[in-house]
Structures are given as C-alpha cells and as structure tokens.
Length: 292
Image (cartoon, rainbow, N blue to C red; front, side, top):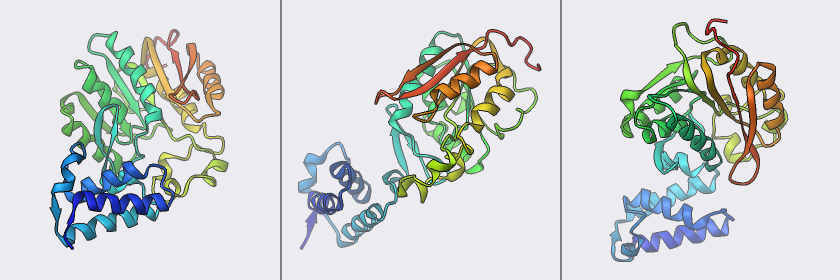
C-alpha cells in the first residue's frame, strides 16, 4: 500500500508515544521531514505527497535509532539554537535552550561596544560565539576548543551562517595558559565542562552514551575549568570587560567565589529560563597588564 508523508508521520508518532518519548509529535515531525526530504513547516501538504517503500523504511530506521536512545539532534545532524540552525555531530554537545540566556547576555554586552572582541572558550559547536557574531554585525570572535572535531564543526557553522570572516577557530586547552599574542577581549564567555564525578554516573543514557565525555566532565567537583579560565585566561580581558559562565544547577555560588578569588568585581548570578541560577558573571576592574 502506497503511503503518504502524513501516514509515515502518524506511524512514527504512535511508535514514539508508546515508547514514552517526551515529545513524540516533535520527534516524529523532525524524523519524517528529514527522511522524506519534506518541509517540516508545511505539514498541511504531507497528506498529498506519496513515498516509495525505501523512503518509508528509512524513516522507520531513523525512528529505531531514536527509540534506542540516540539523540534526535545527532540523527538529524543539526539543531536549532537562538533562532539559527547549527550542524552537530558526536564531537560536540547538542546546543540547549538553557544556554540561550547566556548567549543573550553576551549579545547585549557586545552591542554596547564598537567592533567588540569576543572570546568563546570551550566553544563546542560554536553556537554562542557564532550567534553573537550573526547578531552583532561588527563583532569579532575567537572560538577556542581542544577538540579538532569540535573546531571543524565550528568552522563549518561559521561558514554556513556567514560569519566566517569574523571568526577564528583556535585549538587550545583552557586548562593551560593561552597562546602568546592573542591580544585582549571585551567579552570572555564559556560554557565549559562542569559535570561532577558523581553526576557523570547519573547522566541520562542518551547523554552518557552519545555526547562527548570530554565536553561534560569538569573534574571531581565540576569546577576545574572555571578555576583555570579565571586564573590563566582572565588576563586577556580588557579593563572593564566582562566574563560570563554557564554552570551546573548547584554551582553558581562556587563559581562566583572563584571569580572573587581571581579579583573580578561586580559579580552577579542570573537564572536560566527555568529559574535555575545558571549564569555567573564578573568584570575585570583590576587587571591592567595582560601579561601579569
């Protein structure tokens, strides 16, 4: 029996719903559109478009992967963040809506500057820095990660979103001192690895088995990267510049204390969309010598 795109969507929807997928309608729509090369924004047409058997089988194969725990974003190879579509693969964490308020704060700060320089540490897919460069047309971004796989994704995302001429992707490990001659930045932002040793054992299966552990694990207490960035990379911030972090749901006060220990001032904590204290920031008002 010949099936329409809508028939396949309904089949996937029922399979996902029976398996207790948290968003069966969204997952089924995304998988169906991807497998059938259909426009997910024109589902009204799906009941009139017929498919060959191979396409139907492919849609169900993708659904099998989803039911086996593989994240939808990795199956699709892309995910939306801050109104933009980013390429993702297993070299990078999937961009999450929880990070959008951090991105918004970076953009707000960048708009106050002329040709702002932004340093995005532990950049992963590059979503924060690229979204900032895409929104603030005179911003220049240096995106840093110690994974060549992540940097490849960052460069491709920058190219696809038209900001490749204002973004440099650099391989460096933020646990060590920065390369020489990087200059100084108006804004430093980082969503670093912050999962604790205990939390790693409790991660959801889809995260633990598919997302890169090196982008998740932040040391025994989850704070290793905050300590290194503040102590080793803080000198790259101009006087009056701002540093912003995302952190775990119980880490905000500890990250704020690390900023204070490293002589940052005006330290504040902001909540994410769910009301969780997730963003910690501070200003450089004391470091004048970038080599200090």
